Image (tube, rainbow, N blue to C red; front, top):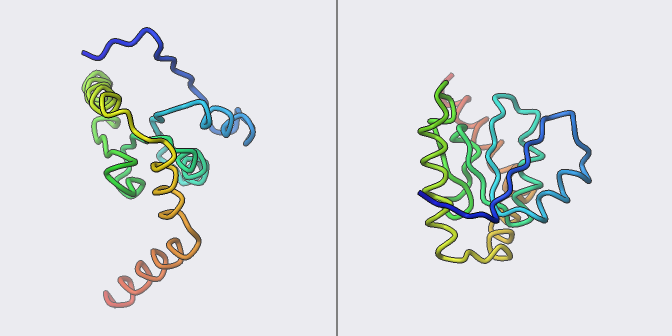
Length: 132
């Protein structure tokens, strides 16, 4: 199991932090575990990812690249131990490769561009239209 005495965990809740707080934490972080079931935090997650932070989420639609985010369905379980173990294994593996947060930030920024969001929206609309 990954054991790092320098590992610090900070927990924030939607509505209990300012944008500046979130961006300060993002600038000082390597990983984020995103637990939201609602769309209210997805924009904050994108902003945090733009700092080069690697994310773990139980929402497959928020996994934008296997280099920058990971799908962890076990985050939905009542028993969090399987999710914790899976995430810590990823963190250990990722940390050994010494990821370049600048390149991760660039990947996230490119995938979060307005044009990309519009393409995704149009693709979703076209899929719905084809079902009619």
